[in-house]
Length: 455
Image (cartoon, rainbow, N blue to C red; front, side, top):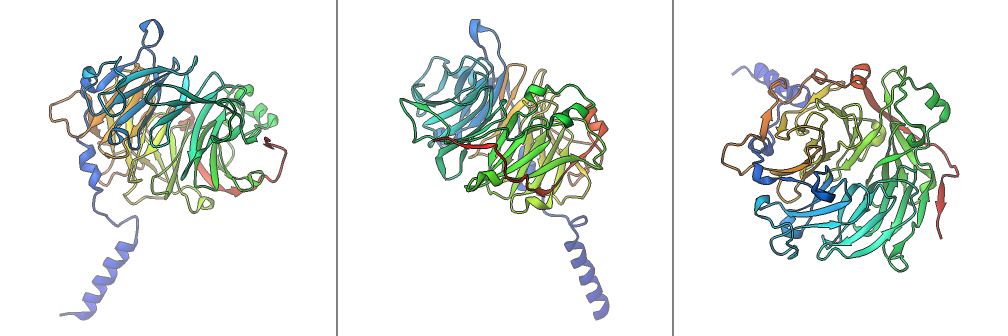
């Protein structure tokens, strides 16, 4: 045996294993199962508002415990919330049945008199929170729709609401008025709550910069709007802006010293606008995603935000703040809506390449037209997904449907066998054609007068 040759071969193999651009990991166990996703028409529901006219659903979320994590909450443009048992065919659910989360369930509550922009479950799914264009946030009981509390303080549409991990009493909201507010649900008077902390002008836009913008599509009145929130942990809150292209990290222990990282055009020469449409942290706390309105999703490490983006996802079309992205329960898959009536899935378990826009490996096709806006992944079943669309329907996708179905998953043939793709999206938006983006390092904006502690 040639010992030197043997050692040389072992060294070469080890070097290949250490090279992330060459190494090949075993396929993620979800990849093959997600290829089986289907959404029969029995699992598609059309939403109707006042006078029985179709109305688009805007926000969706699966429960954490109720019905084994399969109770689906859907909020729509008419200010209604519908709760559905996603395990059953929707055609078999009585829309007037309010028997509760322990039985057959399909019920609609009228919560707001304006569109609901975000929805989330609270207190082990015994209640839920909504935010609306009427400028308020509300807490509602699941069983009977009783109004448990109204959060008052914003002066414009409220865009996002999130609860603090391990402390469901603490909520944060953000809105078109440019303010971020922190709420303690234990502090209220006659079921009306006021914020305990208010961050004013959190993403305040410099008027001089706004005047330099080449695109005039940004309304100066809404340029400082805060469009997305997520808690990184019990000490840090992340927020995304509508037009400044920034994600700010706020230290809740000393919120006035908030640090920020920016999404800037490469080279810094282009001044086109883009905003942050969604923020999410994976269930394991390893990664954070930022979806933007220039058809990009940026993935970065939650433990090293200052190192910038780890990878960039593309292939979908996202030019509005209604299109959202989220992680799957394992944190290795990303699901996003799109302007082209489809939903897209990326696999983060594959090795990444620097300076490459990674294409999705899977597409969900089945909606009849319009924008697929919000998307949700069942927390207890990685092969169950919900998509909301401007065709006024919500579809539930499952991998256990055996019969052939028009609405099904499609493998992205343009992507290479390992799921990577070096090209930019096949039908990119104009903003996407003009520039690429990246996340640069932290900077400290210093102390200012934006923070008001409310007594």
